[in-house]
Image (cartoon, rainbow, N blue to C red; front, side, top):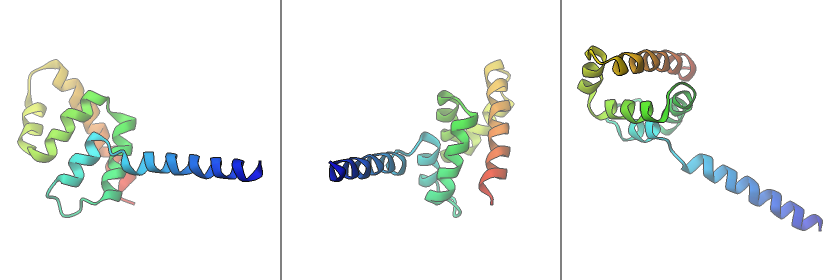
Length: 104
């Protein structure tokens, strides 16, 4: 019985660990695929953690497009659409938080 409980605990840790190490988020995938020299799994994972705390899922999808097309970020920032203005405030907070949290 003790062996079965130990095996179950090890299996649970493996499943949890696999879920966290292989399940990259939208921002993390875009960051890793970007051509930026500083992009690495650790940094991109940290940025994803901050995104999960500060951005909605749809915010993350939009923000991920900025890695490939920085001009799109500028277009959204200068847009007259109210939804873009609201998004930009959240995105600015995300950027400031990621800078502070992930630059350690």
